[in-house]
Length: 178
Image (cartoon, rainbow, N blue to C red; front, side, top):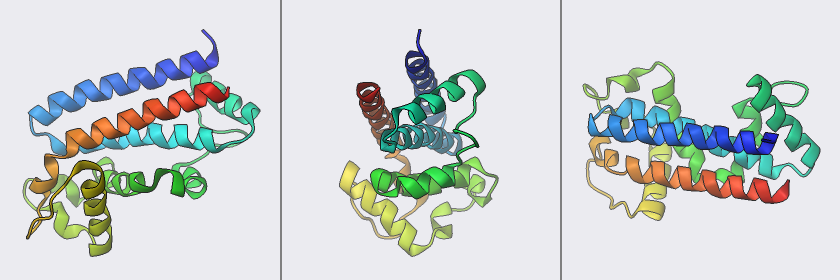
């Protein structure tokens, strides 16, 4: 198995496990962890999109090889999420909003108290409007008066599906270029 095949297998294994775990956790109404899994899938999308923005195939191969062999993401030094977001913001558009929202469930925050306090009240209006716009555009979300976190929860499975489909598309693009 070559490095691209191993890298693809890595992605597929992560996505399969995350999808199965998401379904179980969603059924148990463990939404914070579900959002954390969305964020992991966005991490995959960001890395694939980043690779697909690189013009130098040798750089792509080095990054893939280091990811497979060492679990390190980078060339001569580690490439952070922030570094990747600087290069690919227009390519992942909607994903930035989901990414930032998901970070609040990855990192310890008041968002973990979503069963006691509605996290929607902690999001500034501009960011909330972007999230709503994404849900309207991609998932047919209908605006409601007095929006709550509960209104958004029903869309989590659709968002997960969209992200994983985008991951597969980006992986196909990567495979076609190497």
